[in-house]
Amino acid sequence: MSTSSENPTRSGSDPANRTRSDDRGRDTRPGRDRAGAGRGRSAAPPADLARKAAYEAVAAVHRDDAYANLVLSGILRDFRLHGRDAAFATELTYGTLRVRGTLDAILTKAAGREVARIDPQPRDALRIGAYQLLYTRVPAHAAVSATVDLVRAVAPGASGFANAVLREVAGKDLDTWIAELAPPYETDPIGHLALAYSHPEWIVRAFSEALGGDLAETRRLLIEDNERPPVHLCARPGRADPVELAEAVGGAPGAFSPYAVYLAGGAPGDLPAVTDGRAHVQDEGSQLVATALATAPVEGSDSRWLDLCAGPGGKAGLLGSLAVERGATLTAVEVAEHRARLVSQAVRGLPVTVLATDGRTVGADSDLPAGGFDRVLVDAPCTGLGSLRRRPESRWRRQPSDLPPLTRLQRELLAAALRAVRPGGVVAYVTCSPHVVETHVTVTEAARRSGVPVDFVDARPLLPAGMPGLGDGPTVQLWPHRHGTDAMFLAVLRRGE
Image 1 (cartoon, rainbow, N blue to C red):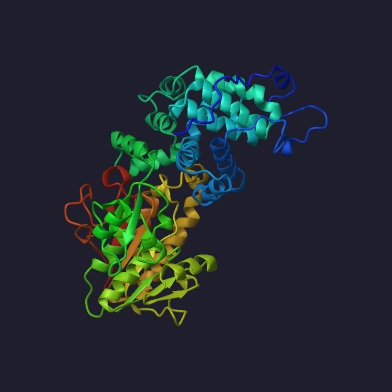
Image 2: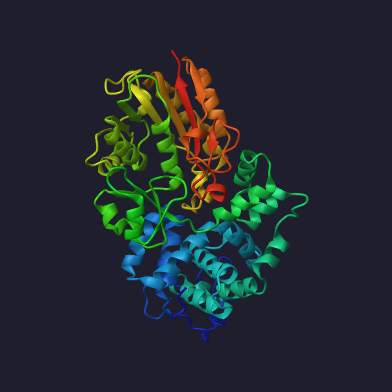
């Protein structure tokens, strides 16, 4: 990580600022406008660019409900950060967002007030500073000094407050803070794991339930969830050889998917194989569940495939490439027009028809005839709890109240898929969530209510031989800590006569 702009001689302690800020870190001097105080003023000490870039990304996530992966690249470009400085800004951004729950508990104690009572600008800067102190090797004096400078730049009246809070944080290491703040594991294991590994308690409880109550394995999952995920490419069948692609990009062939390539880092969107459509960025778990649908045996014809929830197009790109080799065509459905455009871009040159419509209209839409398809994929909208490694802000946005409308939509889409598939054909129900309500409960209820005969197909033989930890079947749950993939769930159903 870069420390080129750290200034260990600057203490950041400013008695004038301490006496002129209120208990939320706000500048109370007459004539000062809190909304833009100090922003861009030459009198404010400049924060180093990597930390400032991280701050802008974290602030955008919390202020605008932005997604870090969408805003950070533009911020790095605007700040002209490259190499180690860009990597440092990226680490600060994703790390701070990932462990926000633990940071907030510690900052609450250190500040002597709830984090919610601290104004947004100093609050996000303090999170970034506390992350450096507790989770990185940045020297404490440098982390404190640079963060106080950052606070001066975004909220000048709060610099003394920030200095005092950060020095309190720096007085203990992470293990000591957790031992002090987390409930005892012996009496409240879920609460302890939630604070120690920075996940909301309801998510830890959901993971534990999906893992059969195994708290040791739940801990391993939480640890893996907090690691930076690798970048996976999908070498499109018929367009790229994964071994040759791995050599060309300095990566390695995947462990399980025959199309997967692991990247060490970099900007995958800039790779020639990605820009010319020979490969796309896609988690290996997503590749495996899409390939499982194409591998499942069907009785009779096998020329009409359907992706009922296709946006943004990764699985449609893989299925479309497989369809070429099999003499099949794919219909890709996406209800949101902007996402349908992304699907169209992803499947250029493939035998794929993209429909911007609601997949639940099967049978009422001439383009989606009942019984008109041999294979159907339902990659259902879900909480996304299986991809928290890649979307660290999602763990703090999702709530248990999100589940009822999502599971209702999931059941309706799966019911539509069972109407769309012909007798003897197969449906793959997929979610990027291990929550049992979104997986086993949804698929069981939808099959029961579908009004058509349905049999579960054992999904395990549809995945590569030798994959560990696939359970007892017939459904399959993939896991980051077992398989190195997102936590994808797969159920395969065959419609009867």
